[in-house]
Image (tube, rainbow, N blue to C red; front, side, top):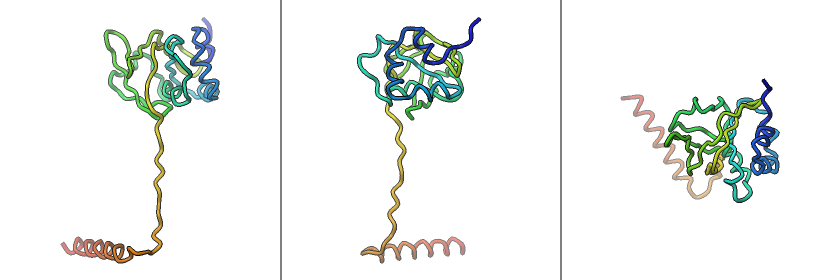
Length: 163
């Protein structure tokens, strides 16, 4: 019996170097290998026609409870490291991702998680964090409108107390 390999060594052992090269280029590998409970869906080399962006790499990684194939709940949404969501279905006995990618080698145990080799890629967009813009009131020409809104709110509160 041998101990599990790192994510990178597991990918190398299956001869899939293109996804590994993209993870290395975007400096994602150290974090993914150091994070416990990491599930990686590795596109096999024949599925890749070009270089993957950082976002595309993160779209293939989940963090949290390990996702071995028996634990996959068809139709359930899983959040990727890119901030996107994926659902996995079982079609014709195969685990199928949005866009048609399928698992071809499942449940490769690594030191900190599990790797699945997939034929195809998982499409998606990186999640965005929306930062609200707060514009302070500086006076200006809408002073009466602001005053009237405050007055209407105050009247509503008083009427609500009386009822």
